[in-house]
Structure formats: structure tokens, C-alpha cells
Image (cartoon, rainbow, N blue to C red; front, side, top):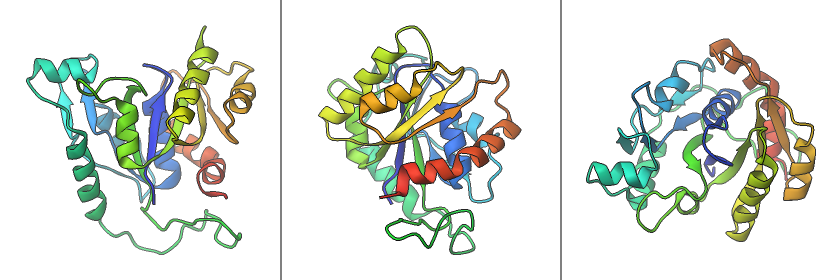
Length: 240
């Protein structure tokens, strides 16, 4: 199974909430390979505290954990580290190969008798959360988009309603298209804008999912959203 890469149209658009909901919905494994800034805790810790699905797991260690809350290439430079995409890819393959086998063969909540559907078994899904948006630099010459290519991932784009978000959303989709990425669909996080369907149509995608805004995205909220979006997410990712 190709991993699912959660990227955003910018910073602070709700990627971590969306990644937690997707991980919960699919009973997936979650990994944040590059963390820049952790004075208030890491995204990995945040997600781990909010998962309920018995198959959902969090990879506890980032490939690169950098103290400075800045662009990863700047944070890495300060610590005299170079973020190596080959190393991230190597760790991904090793982590996925060594995930524990889970009991059972199929998830009864997943459609299994529809021709053409790909039906992953328990724990087959792997969710990777990116840092910022597609063009965030990871080193002097490579960006988040290059990591997505290296991992051969399906992409879910996270958008949030603010002034300028249509432009940022469509630019993100256009860059994905120009680079030949497979965009499975959108997650719109927060207060509805009224133009989510237009963004989906204009971007050429088939699917868009909305996660409502809440002041306290706690464990109950993530569980409720995972249950609510599960079937739409399955159609987004696996229906031919």
C-alpha cells in the first residue's frame, strides 16, 4: 500500500488534526518524520494522546527532531544537521516492515465485496504528516514535495478557510499536478467557507471531506471525526 501523505496549503491549517482523524478512521500507523519546534510538545505526542482505534499506532521517533520552530532547513542548519531524504525513506521502509502484525484479516467497516476496490488489511495504512506546505525546504536543494515523491505517497491536501485560502489551495493543487503527484482529495479543516466544493472541482479532484472547527480537539473529538469520515475517506483513497 502506498503511504498517505498529509500536506497543507500553509502553516497552521490543521494538518495534525486532519492526520489524527485519518489515522483514527483507518486504524493506521502515524509518522511525523520531520519535527521543527517542540517546546510545547511534538505533533507525534499530540496525536498519540488522541487515538482510540485498536489498530491505530504512532511511530514514537521522528527521523529529525529539531528544536527551533522554523523552516526545517533553518532549524537543521542551526543544529549542524542535514535532513537527508534517502535516510527518511530508509527509515520509512524499515518502520513499515517491522510494524507488529495485528489480529484479524479485514475490517468489517470496510467494503470488501465491491469489484475494483482495494481493501487493505488491518494496519496496512500508513499516514505521514509533512512539515508546512509542499514548498517548505528540507535542505538546501530539496523540499517537502521531493519527500512525497521519494515516498511514492498518495496526497491529501488540508485547507482552512481564511482570506486568500482559495488562491493558496489552488496553487497547492496546481503544483501537485505539475509534479505528477497523486492527490486523493481534500480535507477542509475548521469553519466552513461555502466554497469547498468549488475548490474540489477547480482542482480536478473527486473528493473533499470537512472536519468542523472545535476549540478543544480532544480524544473524543478525534474518535467522532474518524468514525464520521471513515467511509468517505475509503472512497477517496481506494475506490477506482
